[in-house]
Image (cartoon, rainbow, N blue to C red; front, side):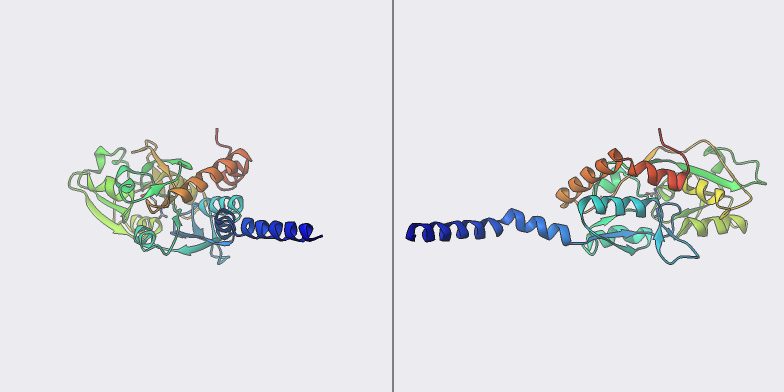
Length: 257
Ligand code: ARG
């Protein structure tokens, strides 16, 4: 009987220590901790707010929520202007940013990116009565609107004698175009195509030839390698399960090859 009691005591001590083991502790903490994600909610169809609903929606929003579900972590979204995303990541107020952010060598100097989740490219848009602008060459000396801090901004800065108007959102850029305050807008093609199809922009012509090939990634601070690894694993599961393609079809209406 005595031996049995002793064994029981040893056994319960063992169970106690296993329960408090460092590994299982951090695992359970990670599970309940919300994933704090920043997104600029003015980039349809990746992140935007509908007039009718106050909720954030879009491809990026659905994707990060699907990733959160894979990781068993609720996603806590905050709306941040595009040029405010990097400083907010650096302040550690958010874990991640998803906002149609193109992976560039320049940005890789201060951010860690997930695997690419979307292929894109920059495109010129002009009013449909403009027949003289048909390529990047034709933009020399022209008035161009771009969203501040974007790859479009960087691209436009290289155009000789161009007069740039830098605004907070692509929607504002298109308003300038409609008012004839600028001759062209440079913006990501999928965003242009979506806004045109939804009638959010009208009387415009999209120059078919893309200026760049770009890939979007989810961004974090360089010291979050473990988190980015988890995001990549979850992204792969979201692709493998077919969820990625459902989200893609919801926003772009076609299956990706
Ligand atoms: N892909 C472009 C870039 O990374 C534009 C992104 C704009 N995103 C946004 N949420 N407004 O520079």
